[in-house]
Length: 440
Ligand code: LLP
Image: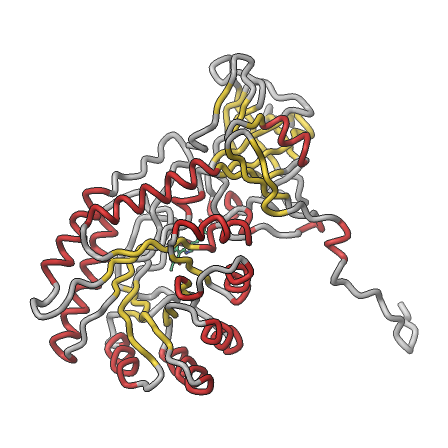
C-alpha cells in the first residue's frame, strides 16, 4: 500500500522519494498530489518483464485515463510503451508531449467525428472500435483523408469480473463494445474486413477495473481466442493483435491482495500458442494497465482544518480537500488509508471519519479510519491516490484543483501547477446587461 519509497523517521515524519511531505506541503501548498517516480518505474518494468517472460510477441500500453498530463506522457516516452487515450483531449496531451502517434491507441465508446478525424490525421497506431456505426464513421473519415485506419474491435466476451458495478465492463449487456451473444460481433468483423479504408488488426476486450483475481484475465484471453478461432474457420481471418485490456487491481487497504500475475500470463501465452492455427502466427498480446502503474505511486497531502465531535460521539477530521480531488469514495465507496505526518502509527489510535470541505454530506473521504490523535494544522497523507484522482478531479464549489508534483532522488518537480482563482474565471464572460430590465 502506498509508494515504495514511503518512509517514516524516528520522529514519525514521513517522506516520499526522499522528500519530506512537510517540505512538499510548505513549498507547494495543500491539497497536493505527489507521485513517486520509483514506484511508477518499478510497476511499469514489472509488467514489461512479465510480458517478456511469456516469450510471445507482446505490447505494453499504459492507460492514460488513470493519470495523464504532459509530463506524464513525457516521462513515459523513453520506456517505448504504448499509450491509450479516450478523448481528443487525452490525445492532444500526448501529442503535446511529442508522443509517437504510432504508439497511441484511441479508445472510447463515443468518439465524435472531429476526434476521429484528429486521430486519423495524427496517425494514431490503433483505433479501438466500439460499434457498427463507429466503424462506418471511421471508414468515411479515413476515406476523406485518404488514409487507412488500423482498428481493433472491442468485444464484450461475457466475463463478469468481481468488481464494483460501475467499473465492470465485460458482461454482455455492457455499454462498451460488441456484445458477442447475438451475432453482433460477426457482423462487425465482416464489415471491418470489407471496408476499403479499414485494416482490421485484431480484437480487444477489457473486463473491468480493480480486479483482484487472476483468473478473469485468462478467461478473457481464452474467450477472445475462441471467437478468433470461430471466425478463422468461417472467414479465414486470424488476428495480429489480441488486447486483453487493463484492470489489474492494486492495494488500497490491508485486505486487498493483488494476485501474482506471472502464472496467469504464462497460461495466457500457452493458450495463445496452443490455439493459434498451425498455418497462422501467434498474435501479439497487448495489455493496458493504468491503475496498477500509477495507483500506489500517488499520495494526496491534506492539511487538517477541523477536528470535532458530534452528538453520538462520532469524531470528524475535516481536511482542506475532498470530493473535488478524490471523487472515488463518493462514487464507488472506495476505501483509502491515511497517515498523519509526525504521529506514530503504532501508538494509541481512535476511530475518525475524514470529511472533505465540499458542501455535500456525501463528501466523506474515509468513513471510518483509525488515526493517532489529530490536530488542526496536521498533515494527513492519503495513500494510493495516484490513479483516477487527478484525472477525475473537478472544480465543484469553485475550488481550484491541486498541483501535481513528482518526487525522485530527494527532489520534487512540478508536473501540473495548482489552479488559481483566476484560472477559474479565465473562460467566464462578464454578464452583459439585457436590453430589457429583468423585473422580479
Ligand atoms: N483499457 C480500457 C479499455 C479501459 O476501459 C480501462 C479502464 C483500462 C484499460 C485501464 O484500467 P485500469 O488498469 O486502470 O484498471 N474511474 C474508475 C476506473 C474506470 C476504469 C475505466 N477503464 C475508478 O476510479 O476506479
